[in-house]
Image (cartoon, rainbow, N blue to C red; front, side, top):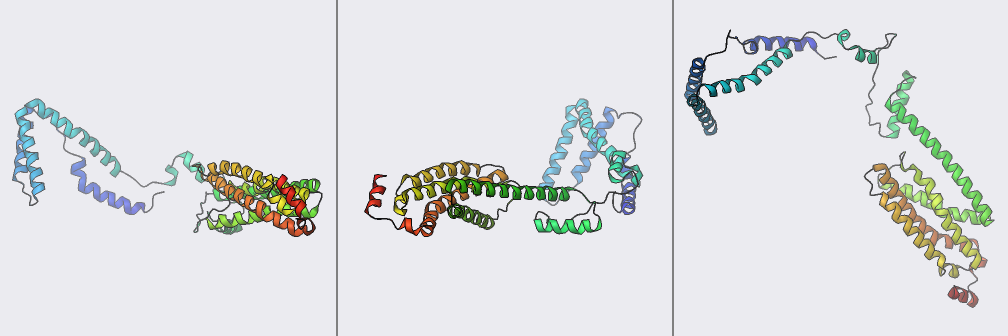
Length: 339
């Protein structure tokens, strides 16, 4: 509903009084003759010529207008008729619009269209109430505080913030379940493949470190997790576990740290990671913000997985299995060279 209707109506009444002679001009019973039009043009050009302006540009414009009106007289009656039609058609339309704009009355709620009133008033007479947050609810904590405060008074309150909060909660719960299932499945595969709890834990070490570093970098880049890029975390474990298995299996097979680092396994991991990195890096160029954030975080994750798997995991294996890593005699050197 319009605000301050009474004050605005008083202003409109004053405007009607001042402009009544302009918006309701005296209309002749018939169109003016050619002679009357000629006399009107002469009088108007004389008034224009008598008007003087101190500003040179205004005086020049005034003189051009006077010359143009005198030229109409030389062009004959047909030019005067065309000039009158071109000058008055739009003017009459504007005056009619102005009359309609000024002729307004007090607006009541019952005068609103039924389709609009049905959205604002329920069948039981209850009114639709809209609450606006004072803080920026794009921040999760501000959104939570706003919803808790509103629902403390009106538990059945709904709207876009409630829907977004509900969808976000569903996504977070689904993400938690996915992480639990992924970790359990990966742990089971590692235990069956490596047949050692210690080696399985060592494979997990680069994965957990990568996840922590990616989250830290996301905070530093002001790129918080959202409903799109939250899938980066479980993908870290899915993408990095196979490289860890290859390194551990190679270490257990060669029983030597130097042989592992000089073998084809690190080079294979490097090439495989670079191809994956190139794929995800192309996603970061997407115009879609969610897709671009997924590509950027996954590119960072793959790079960190490569560093931690190739350089950190062999060190951890050497610490966990000192008896095997210490075996670096002549025979092991020959094995590394032959490989």
